[in-house]
Length: 139
Length: 68
Image (cartoon, rainbow over all chains, first blue to last red; front, side, top):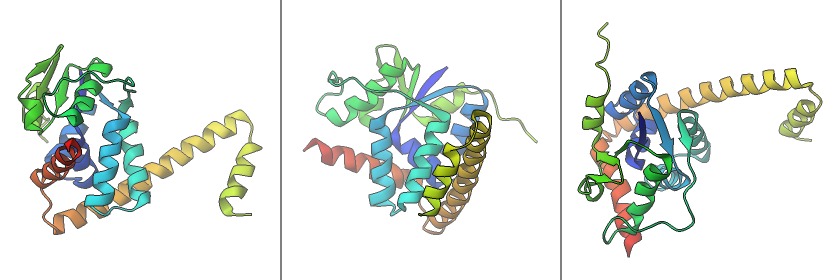
């Protein structure tokens, strides 16, 4: 299974170690889900960490490196076909999933979720993605 | 010469096996640094009661602002 977590999933992953999304990403890795990220998503991650959450340059550097340790970096084509009506900012997110050949795009962006599916990529919330993973082992 | 320059200079003199060993150790060090940074930031965000919903709003606000 291949999946692209949207930027907000990565921001949560990098700032809330005991949070639901951090655990979800770790579970996905444990179950050999192949995760992908693009320079566009990394740039959004950087801006939120730096400008909204006031993280240091060192933190942001380490956070980006932590993401690319578990997610394969895919480059986007120079020209991105519009797929989200009226919202070109979202096109790069969808293109990340298409360029990765992903099965799933995991997001909390309602405008993306409303698309449902784009060229074989199912756009789903984190809770739905969780249902696709095997149950957590009980201690 | 800075400490970094000294380290890079010494790394340049390593044989390939030693260089791989150095990279492995640096990767481990980086992961330990990240674990410490993540723990510290997570504690700070917990104290500030930061939620996933608020994170969503930060990301989405930037996207919607970028439209105009």
